[in-house]
Image: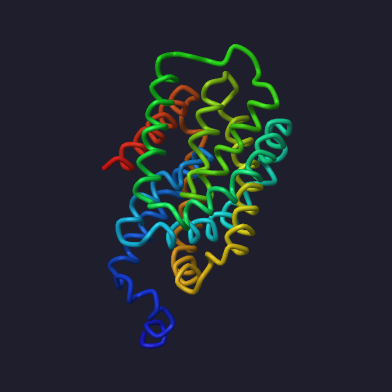
Length: 253
């Protein structure tokens, strides 16, 4: 026990074992949602983990545990995804992530989270009204959504809302949407880690927190993936809307 205490001593000075327990629970819950729907981790993890740790610590740690945990799900997703949309979204994300990481390091996280949450609520209200995209969005629109996702990804690991709302506005099947989300997030997540590494955001505290959370996150991903297919497509869409709305409300509290 003393050895474990010594290894994690730098991290424990930031809140002790209770803080780690809260973050671990948040990681499991967020991963369960991610395994089921293909998105939603940060919507749950970031608000809860930010209660005990600063976003500049929680956000990079989430990136580190998410990419390897979802890797086993990516091959199957690549066979079912829409490659056109994945490529365009990823292209936009490449430009957006560095801007988001810069914001994470220099902007007051509370101000940033307030703006993001307000925007998400507005988008949910529009979509809940019944609005749907009449035709397939063009390349420019898709790239713009990818860039917005990248900015939010770098700043708060919230790459999901713009892309999820983009897909929910259409009429594609839940299976295809989930596969495309997983493929896009896999590429975007890898690029985010590279950007965080270059920016110097992956310090000792981040690495230690990621090491603690990884097992809980991996189990949550597996558990959530077992739940997929148990709900109808209509229920799937309702769950997605609920998650996005809940995330926005948490950000406003």
